[in-house]
Length: 601
Image (tube, rainbow, N blue to C red; front, top):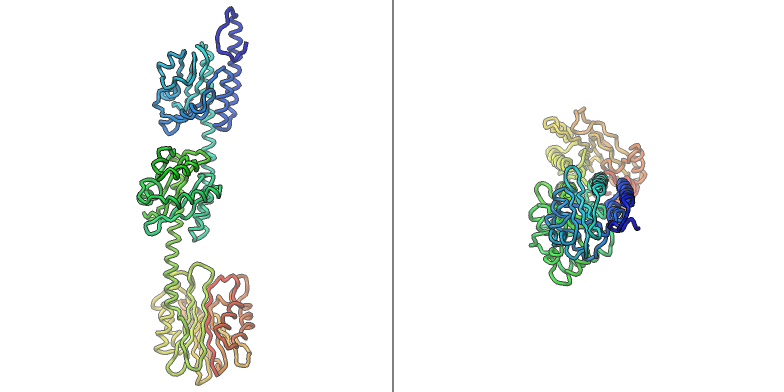
């Protein structure tokens, strides 16, 4: 006799045969429980329960049902019923009258013998299986509550021995332990994956002030590990502008974009990104239902296309910084069939906070940089003054950095035919350096208006720093050219020395600074006088022109002197530009300011 046949005692069968059959079933159940202890996924547990355990005990219908979201049962696996019936019972409320539901609610085994008893107690099950049968629902308990149930259905009115029922309970307990263990392992992997993702996302967000590019990268990182779809919208003047949408399949991205273009989202909608933008409150949709699709679709065609996307679950969170919604992050599951939970929502909100801070920091930096650039442009002269007997030109090029520097320069026409020239550099970068640069340029011009001699201007600047201490150090070279005497008088406070291109083509470097930068203790300033005749050309500059990393500055000075001959060309602005390009550090690591004065014949 087949040991898996329904337990119908044969006429005249000896008790020893019954004992042998029961022993065989228990041995098979023991092997099944051993399999459960080694299972590594919910799918593996499901297969063992609905296939191996059913075969071991002779059940023609077997199911594994898990409790999710507190009051919903999810039948994760079943064997022995029609596909449409299985789909109908895939998810249903815990309150529905079923053997499985009662087993989960009470934590007690449910056993029913005979079709009349089953149909009377659970009329919703009528029609699932014809004829006499026996049903057993076994609660899977962990830490005092049921996490689901195993359902078994046998043909006929089967008598189950106490020993066999106890083994069924052991099967359910082993199944529960396996599921709890797998869940714990998955949680550990999930948390590890989340931490790694947050680390990668944070690194990406901190890597650049181009927050739009980094947000697109974060969207790419999220797919497909945490979402099948990821979209990021930014707020722009009360509107949502789609920044990024990601999916592993580029064709699906184009498909979704076409849907969005044909049927733009309703700004008045009470669900989705627009509502999250208005309220600043996250939204979680654990399951996208058919009713939701019907309510969201504007016409049958859109409904058909949305269904093709196969949306399963979604969460939408605001990007909030300083109590301001800067954008919205949306994750949607589809192919993965993931159903998002409150835990997933909290994780997405954590990511959204980091993204919002990155956006806010980038905006603040952009505003600060814009203010510094406006200040710098307002202070630096647009062009050199036109002075009879002189050809004056200047050059300013910022570094490749994202902050402005403190380089400044100017040329001043003096009433007696002389020309005052100065170039300076405020140490540091950003708004403070730009503001200090503006103050220094104004102070030099003011002192030059009183007494333009280099010694007087520099002494007054030293007194200013003495009376109004500052943490800003400033280097400055100040020169006065006098055509009447063919002389150039210079005072240098810690600045790179200017260079001369003589009318005969020879080059000369002015003396190095004989004083410390402004803002340090004055050690006494001296002024030097050198010949400066018709046809001679002066080039004063900031250190960005000659300095290079890991190189002695003397090499930069030599490189400049070698290139200086180009300033003899008629086109002085073009010549200066070429000299700067030839001499400066190719990495453009520092700003360059240069001022050229050619004395005409």
